[in-house]
Image (cartoon, rainbow, N blue to C red):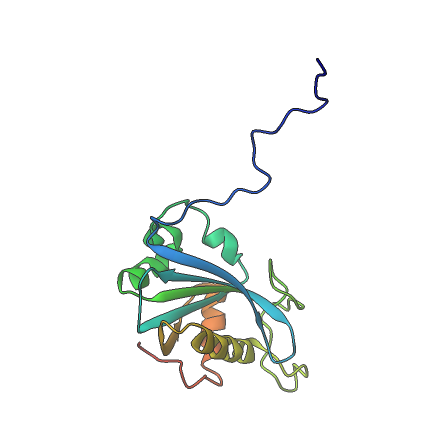
Length: 174
């Protein structure tokens, strides 16, 4: 009898969790900005949601880590703490790594100034928020086309910058 040189592994090459019973769907997208740079965006949608507003958080703190701290089939447990009330209200939640951080392309510039004399690149947090909102409302047919932005710390800065040249879908309250 010939003995095999290797035994089959008990660990699958790729593990895919079963998500049928989860109360949300998770998508990861690379959203293109006007200059071609793609920003990693995680979209968390309550299952069966229709006509839902979107809440966008743009962060340098790792959107993937923020949405995988807890392994849960419940969306309210998966999102960062300040977003759990939005989930309870039926929002679609989108978290995005800003330029040059974690899964996003481009160069990271701390507190990137608005386009102008201090930033001749033509892109900034305002244009990135605008382009992201445009992508979200065009690619999430289960949304109602209204978007809010939220964030604390550096995310608060990106939220403020989203109002500099706001997208028409950006609302003070959805």
